[in-house]
Length: 168
Image (tube, rainbow, N blue to C red; front, side, top):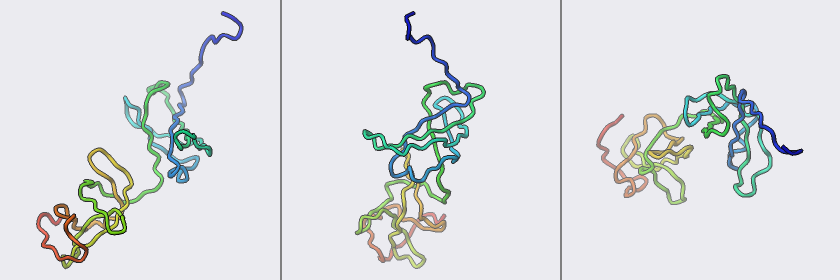
């Protein structure tokens, strides 16, 4: 050993710190103290808390560093393990749908073609809040909405349609 050589590294795994990048469009939705859900690649989800929000973006990725802390008394999550973090920012009713039934209106807004009470077709704007490999989560669909799932790309607003299929 020489003077200045590293002898050892001490790692404290309880509590653990999880560092995640957050996009510039979402950083303003977060605040210190918010609860989070942390899911390690090999285990069950557990609760964490936002403890730090960077106010300086990484110039290469335009993301902000956010730190979460959580108890890890059994050391189930080792240093360097990949985790997924979810930080709920607001609660709203959403629906999971196939992206194949989404349409664009003349103004370029994303939405669905739906059938009104007297069977005229209508464009219903929606907001995509999350995506998955098998669908998208959207806001803006009332509970008792009849969605056109076949041929929606050929139907214009106000056109009367003859709905068939499930009314659920």
